[in-house]
Length: 513
Image (cartoon, rainbow, N blue to C red; front, side, top):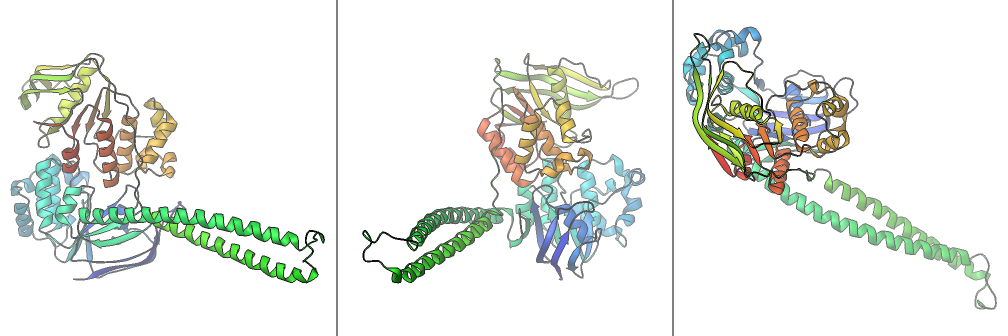
């Protein structure tokens, strides 16, 4: 067991004047199962890179721990090889028998080690890399969002696996995973960093209580400020009135006054002025304390959605529908799914569920093409049965792929025919920093790219919202924000999303593929 001591760390990227971290100090234990929580763009991955020694910084990070990072960067050349050929390049001194033992715990056949790495599914790649990662000794493991792109079954396997381990820092926005796997949390708040014992739910409960207390205290401070301001004004008026009486008086009306009363009046005025100054200091202190109370409170803005009503009740219908790939020439036909019967009715929020590769995204693409009256551009995709969409159906689509995003946000808004000011407003409500507005989208984090796609979808009035894994890389606060939005406006949705908490709250029906 050892500790990681972070003392007075300040860091900013070259060319930027904004600090990512400023005078940060905390202490963590390498035996902990530590969950790392924070909004997109707040510096989680940056902090991992600081631990790995990739950047220069002010302050100190002291530890005897050896760090290892997931996911390993796998080269194009290595993708052509089997993991059994290059695993030692990822983890020097890693023993093969240990990798086999870890794979068994991850419920993956050892045969996967001998297949070309590039042919493995997302779930298989994750399991193989985790097995290699945990096959070392005495390392403190830095695990960055391991469940992205994984189906529900693979997520459960990874969750059970990590729950048995210790000595790692887990960056994740998956509340179910965090609750199952961590015993401490490291939280990047808006203006501070805190370390707390417990999982995500216990931290969130404590935070909610603290936020409620701070809000109540804030209201008390507001009232006290108003009271003090009123008293200060009255005292200032009295002081001014008394000060004016020093300079001349009416001997008939004020026959009991003489020049000898002037020192008394001056002293009284001075006392009142001092009282005003003390009140102003108290006002300043109250304002400062009030601001300090609210600095870390999460108050997500209410987003808006503009669902449209269609004249038909059934928007999408499939009868004995199937998709297959291949079948051209000598290529055998490989069914993805067959004999699917389902429909999406107005007001429903239907979630597609199944393993990676079962055809969820293929079905979505087929629906999109059908709604636009287009034939499949994929010559190897074969369809059976019937798939129909309501005439005049308007769809707002969020693609799971972000590789097509380029240029700045202004250019993106123009290509999407979006109102630029409204687009920026929604992005700010999703906590995208203004500094990102002038950057190229290619340089955005994956979470920031996803927020741009979601914001664009929210701005488009539609009969049906089709979202394909919209929450990958999206921070937990924005996830809850989006949940509340959907529950408020009740749009008709067809979605693929493996976040258990999100599906439980949002889905009205789940379709198995």
